[in-house]
Length: 276
Image (tube, rainbow, N blue to C red):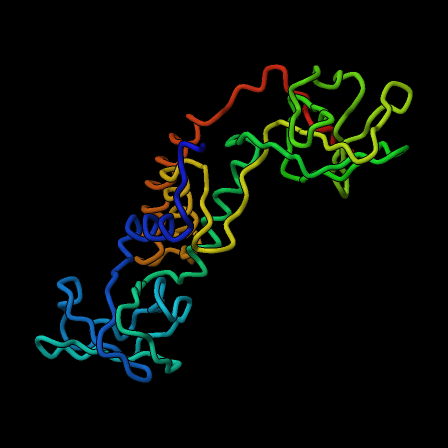
């Protein structure tokens, strides 16, 4: 079990809070292109949210719906947000709002932060998806593998691998080119048709494609690194706004670098994937 298991949504909200760019709420009284939110965090003057760049439905019936705020009307105790393009949300849906960066930007830079430590934040990985075939010595393998500890043969009982010693490392290698595959030495290994193999090794962490996917990478590193990249993307010159983003980028990058230094796993005894 991974030590960390933050979802993309949790990482996005964490990063947005670091950027002072998040307000969340619950939809009430929805209509076409409008809804009411009377929560305390939304107690803002008329037109306060008009120039914010996105309202995004992150949980509920209309999850994934996005719009640009166009009008904010403060009428105690009900406050109405108007957004475009018009869509009708559902009462009880949870929404997030951003003033500085869009949801897509947060998601993209979270994934870039994960990619940046693809060879450092290694995770344990087991693959049992390969079935041997007679006279076949090469088998496709997940491109995530960077190191392999051992390869075990399935016994006569399906799913049981511990009845014999692992395959001698001299009899196989893992090669990464346009595809990644495990290759057995024909002179020393005879595949048993239909038998599975279990490959145990270390792999790079996956990028997150959905809000519910989890990452095993240190969330503090991801959030601060993504924040640094987001601020960097807004530096345009010597104006005051660019200066602000440059300062925030420097602060965030310093924390991300400290968290990155703590990463690393033992690879003693592991055989690296050969890149060709």
